[in-house]
Image 1 (tube, helix red, strand yellow):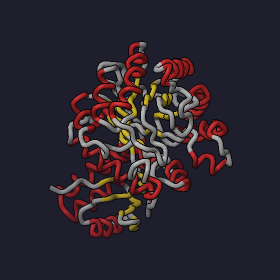
Image 2 (image 1 turned 180 degrees about the horizontal axis):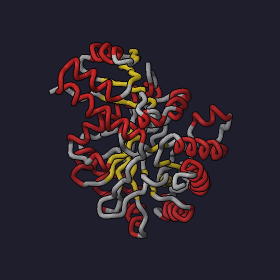
Image 3 (image 1 turned 180 degrees about the vertical axis):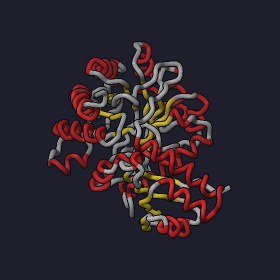
Image 4 (image 1 turned 45 degrees about the vertical axis):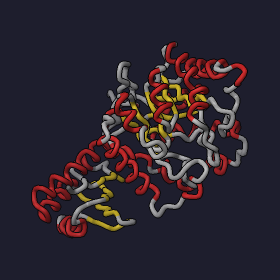
Length: 378
């Protein structure tokens, strides 16, 4: 069986008027022959890090594939190219939360507030985790974020900052389950930030509706099958290595292409494992095995990730690369930079932003969304 090609749309604004798109294709059978056939139909192609980048009217590219390999190859290319272009041109779908209302990612950006139940998170470690008052501090913080306008609360009990040490599953459960249970009982949409299947299972039993996995299933082989069994929404994020090692693996020839292909491959993998594609959010993993320059390039070209047809989540809040850009060494001094990056990410296609500073972000996104949609109903 031939793997379907992966299509990343770099530009497609002219397609509705019959114009060309610029497409980057990986895993394309007979790619050189298709490139030659597309060139004969007034297409332009180049090889970039092993990917075929073609500027052509999509229908002509599909016809070129047909001339090379017949209907079977034409259908294979069409099945990759057409949905990618449609997704890039359109808007992300809503995110269903089984047993609950959907997250309205199709109509507006969604804010995910961070509830760190850890002593060592990079931005607010210990501020909302008091072992002698557990889960009181975390619950007060979660309620404040809801009052400020958060749509989702992301509860995490293990720090994923660069260099962080792992904790055992029992300690993670002790930290997060009382918080998840109490906030869910109060009506909050709760996400559990974990890489462990047992934590995901118990958090969903306690009321969590989303599993936010920074490892893409790479830490615990049982996590993806568990998510499939539970039928909850799942955030699929790009990362290399572990928090201890990831910054030593921040080497890319083409960071956008490599991160995109990873997410596309893992999206196919988890769908084959039984996780409904309609339940998946994709996250390029800002700050995870990336340099500051990698992060900025990913943000600048974020719209390309909408080719996957899933809501895109971005987490830039208070991260170190913002400090390198602005000179703000304290995480508390990166609020303006964080809000700015969130608004720009939404303008570039992000539908969910994961943030510490909810009130400020809600205001900024309301303005960004109003500007982006002004005149749409005229």
